[in-house]
Length: 244
Image (cartoon, rainbow, N blue to C red; front, side, top):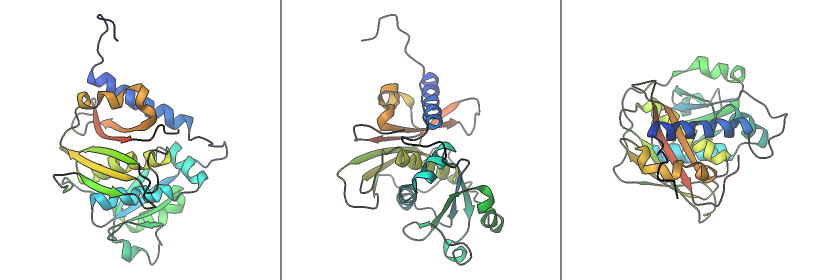
């Protein structure tokens, strides 16, 4: 129980603490990460149509399929990802993708060095989406590919004032890092909810330092006020622990 004179952390304090926790986890690397793990890796997603459920399933499937060295190097690069506008089916002839989302509107490449991905980057333009993503009013049920595990994952994402290109960035970091840490695994059931705004007060328990092992957060600068942090996503696994 807190002392009666203890000062309750502000929302800004809570978000700053969560951001520092993510930074520390990435710097520490994944469990078993060796010194020879490649660094500065980048993934590419070719975007034709955005289907939130297919995007979450595809991002998870892509991260799950990576080799240990790729996982470690990409995680240490903060799961850096570039989104390019194009039709995966048209691009595949010259640049075979590594993973294709259900429906074929999204394709994943890498992770690799920027030099290795330069030909693809020159071929396509950066994806820019000024409008918000069209999301359902109710929760999305997403099953990660694989035999049903019996584990559940709760994921909440902010959409208010969030452009579609920013939505892709926030969700991809959230899902990819959760997979690499072991919070999301094959066959997991993921329930995705969308809210206009994620009030840190509603997620204080999840954002507490003691929950870091089973929670993945996405905290970044507010798109309209760069000096202010905003909570864009929270992912909570019902597993006992997650590994960094």
